[in-house]
Amino acid sequence: MSETCPHLEYREEGDGRSFEVARAFCTVTGSFVQPMRADVCNARHGLDPEADCEFYVAPEAEAGVDIDENEER
Ligand code: SF4
Image (cartoon, rainbow, N blue to C red):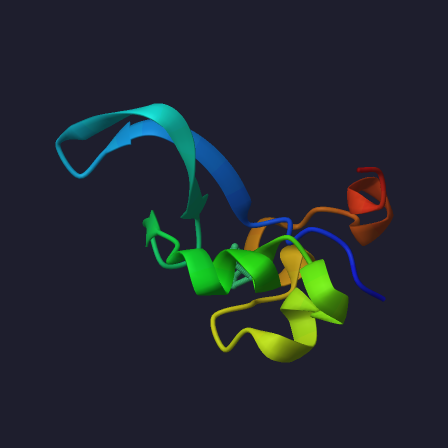
């Protein structure tokens, strides 16, 4: 199933800088996401974070969150 990665956040500051437009940030790697990878994070173009991202970890393994709670967009 393709949906936005639960580890994706948008932040307007980080790495000691701030941005006018919020940038994609991965909470697994703790770093901003490169534009090409953001397509995976957002499940664009048929990409799937779980299948196509090597950083992906199952949400319940990380935080004990019931995966059903992450179904909403
Ligand atoms: S798809 Fe990968 S890089 Fe993007 S937010 Fe999820 S774990 Fe991070």
